[in-house]
Image (spheres, rainbow, N blue to C red):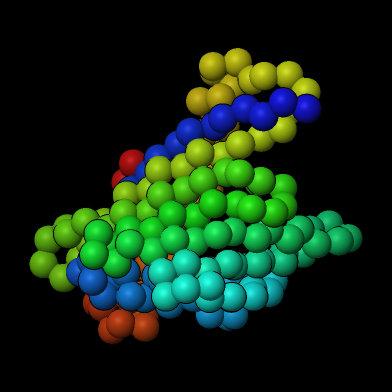
Amino acid sequence: MPLYSIPYRFSVRLPAPPDAAFRWATDFRSDDLSLSGRAGTRKVEWLTPDALLLTDTIPKGRGTDSKTRLVRLYPKRFAWTNTHVRGSSLHSQFLYELTPSGRGASRLEFTGLQLLRLARGPSPRATATLGRALAREDAALWRALARAMARDLGARRVRRASR
């Protein structure tokens, strides 16, 4: 089946300045999935100081869904990429960039390219609908992570995400 691109974007306010938010968000650990309330396991394999493999195995129906992603860190830019190298989202790629957002806060600017194998190409309207659904789902995940970041870093409050 051919691949089709579903591009999407969103922005989420984080309760820490970019440097602290970057350190927190890229401190990958085996228990990370629980921070967002998800079940599953994570294997973290550092390849170099700025590149690692993340393998997440999530319960799905009666089985599991396993995805491996190559993550590349850009600490001077407070950014990182995440490229799926194995699993159902093969070759999908995501860019995370942190920017200042007022005193003691930052914004996660997310740009995603979800690649889907489909028998038929989606219409432009269906592509836009899929993109909005992916953005809603991923932004909700990052809002949960922002709450965990606030707890971990002692921030007072977290505002809702905006697109």
